[in-house]
Length: 152
Image 1 (cartoon, helix red, strand yellow):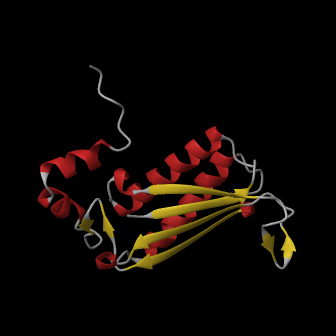
Image 2: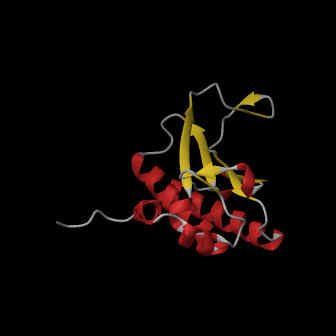
């Protein structure tokens, strides 16, 4: 459902940074929207030095850019809260000394223009009803995402 792309200069973020950033973006999104954590996906894109420009010049400062696509229908106050919390959490997770190096943009898409897990997505806030109506195997698969593997 929500898809967050994190862009940085190649080599800036370690595997540990990426894991922590993904966890924090997922946590903040779920906390603010009430959507299950298994809906969130975070994709990292690293660009070679000299291929990331700001103001027409090659990036020279420490920067992590987060661009999220979310379902429409959230209140403006919630989106504002979410991007502020997300920017702070990403800065801490990335080890940035200067929080001005985290930029977060969020754009909205109508829910009925997306299919995930083989099903049209619900409107914002309708996740519990939508999830309950799914076939049991689909529901179990989705709910297992991000959970520790069962011990046998």
